[in-house]
Image (tube, rainbow, N blue to C red; front, side):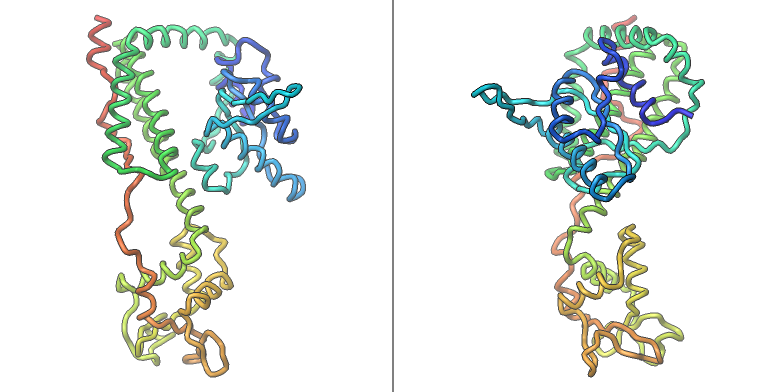
Length: 372
């Protein structure tokens, strides 16, 4: 079966036809300066960073992740590093496309928000790509005619794309770093819509095939977008020092816990509210938090430490943060203090993106009519 690096080279071969494959493959084992210099030297090309994997020592894995993250940040921000040439400082700004292969996702919010993450969930049979690899000029020729067609309709396409991005931002009121993720995935969909418009214009008899291709791409792009958004939400929640307190407060206000006598604990109820206190087992709360945040790394110690820090645990006579009821230990949480951790306003949908299947952002009618 075809591997990540082979597929990455195939994707970038159209842009890298002017040179052999190897110069465009940058190994993350290299030093940070060497990786940056190679990316700058490959401006206007596709630079393939290979490979982010968990092997070796923990320090080596961390260095590989740091190098990849730095390239992503400098490329995404268009920021420059200075290199001394004699007494003159020269700015080195990466301008190419960075394509990275990895065996696990990055773990820094600001870095993940600058990339498009596309998991390889479907195995690709190399025989389906054999024709393209055997005759790479065919793919380059296809792109040549597509770009010529796009140039003929450049002004119309640019106008439509700009108006759609302006509408998305106004509708979603998006002002956070997550805008990058929404924009990046939308750009992919826009590009595919334009490409399929071209294909339908050239081959009107293949409209049904082209439509199926576009719909499949839209579904895949939407799934990838929502998956990455969940990853970002998890990374953002991990940085929230009060996320377990907020979660418990939201559970309480949603009516999840019922008022009942303590003697019913462990029999009819796993948690109750009695005399202004919420009785709940720490193990149950941790399990619920793991499911809610999609984070199996949530621990008993992390939850109890936060609740204790925020003054949400009543101590028993022995200064323990739990009380034994019917032979089982329960946390005692004053419900009146939970309200302090509720959000003051409803969450804002700042991403504002849905990828509607029945909405095209391209002037299809005008393009098709111009082709007769």
